[in-house]
Image (cartoon, rainbow, N blue to C red; front, side, top):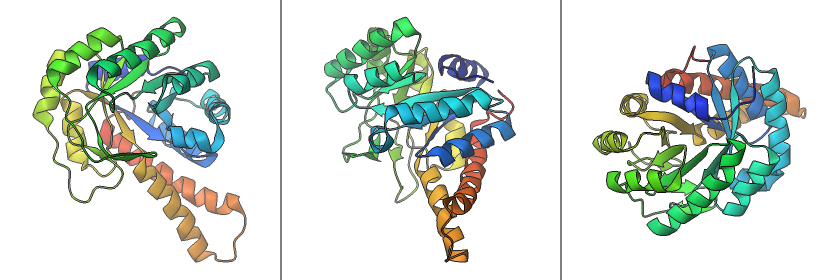
Length: 282
């Protein structure tokens, strides 16, 4: 189909009451596996890289990888900078060709978050590249950043933040966390509903790996249009490699264990697309 931005994807999801799955990818195999799942489910998909992933291999390599795969895909594919941690990194991703940018100023004070976010949104606007930002603090560990003091998104602040920054989508903090949950998360869905009343752009749920499927569906019913999945994909890929090497301890061809790892990731992504309700929406 085409290599696209996230703007129309998320607007369509917002209007129709489903969400687009956003999947963090670490290597070529994960890129191939996510796109395979999206094609089999006829669903749009967002592929994401975090700063630590970018540090591992560089923006140009991930961009070239995803662009090449997306141009052969039968469904719309976007490449998103997840948790961009500086204006500089956001601009590097923009120049390389990423089709969606997140700037995460949630660890700054409210006024500083507005200033940083607005600067990125204004810089991306001439190129038509949508910008996601975060307000409130999603707990857990994301890349090299730990958040042991999560803070919920205030609906009044969200309304002001969106108006003053010009962003395209907003990631909200309602009780999810990055990484592995020690127990079942308690989500403040009433807060989400209140934010939805105040904000007229698509809303994003971070830290969805490990959240019960029905809880994710409830968040989508209350206004979430993009759901991020990272940890469960990493686990799936690693489990595939481990299983192959357990069954074939003498194996040394990366293509062999990579193939099984991709199967594990594809299965996981298809499950998440089903939860998001985006199957058949491409």
